[in-house]
Length: 334
Image (cartoon, rainbow, N blue to C red; front, side, top):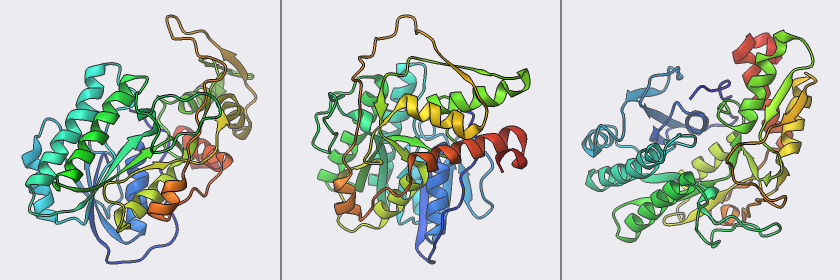
């Protein structure tokens, strides 16, 4: 998946924390996670299918985690002796249910088999999704005890991964914590996401003369958007938290934003006046005007000592800056 920009390095670090294997380290979230871990003093072992530009300080290890089978990952874990493994791999926008199943179910099953067979016992931080929950009506916040009946293949396959991890914890096979992420936004937001599409349209149409026309699906929902750097801080906290084993923890902003407001904010920050056109989607399920999501983050404060720190404007500004820099060069994002 093409990405719009690259993550920045967060502040503050210590040293000598050990190695962490980051699966999916070249993806949007994985790159932010690797950066935060390195700044926290960890050596990053970056694992991904395809080599992409990563910091020279990271040790890149190419591997298709599904096709390679668990033995390859066992060998890597035994050779590197990590203190933690972060699973930031997976599919969000696969066009097929089988693609979701391979990346979000089978990959986790292979990972758990490898961890059980390894001679080391690193902490596993599994990145799940709040879309594993049953959609709730307006005003009902998602908590870790909310019902789990996902509305789509992505949520169903991610829930399979979460449940597999929790079963492995209960049997003593792994030391693990699951972080359920809300809608992650920031530098490197993929073009497959709504805001990534809007940024791409603003940039691609700039040469055609004003006003560009930004075409989107109907914007009637509200969502909890969380900054990618806040997510990365939560992963570092999950690696370190002594009492996090066996927990599912929601990682979100703890606030809800109308999706239209986020699109309007991105257009405003871009400085490129645009006509916003909502196009009907043939055959799509009609969304009620009350399609709404907000996520309670109380458990994250208690279990991880973490709370969100960045605003909707922060994350959208980072998204635009990085997308503009990638599209037109560093001067465009200044």
